[in-house]
Picture (cartoon, helix red, strand yellow):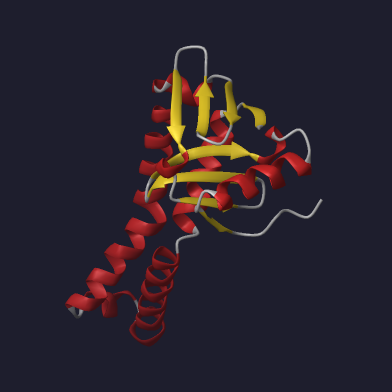
Length: 171
């Protein structure tokens, strides 16, 4: 059994969501491709070249979306979600056993069977317990009392058939 307490600030929650979105290879490739198209056109023909063809206009709008619109909307959406959902901004106690993961806060209690989780992803300072592609539990690694607790949690997850991605943090 592993037991740990999780507390996440709004700033941490927002930063992690940015890291997840902008760490996605599809977003990075799209950003790079649009930047190359826009830069090439600016170099070869100035601003007038950006309005010559539909591909140039689409690249310009996509770059604007990825650099301006997406970050702003992501910030306000994630910040609003953090303050609306009590489960995100209150202390949560995770308790694991052979049957699953029990998460208890001041206003809720949820028992998840291990089968509810698809992947455990280790990031620099975080562990994300993914239930679906865009839904999971965020756990700062500082929540574990010791590196051994983290290793025990990972071992339990792997024993239950959950994929583990990422590397263990360097202690």
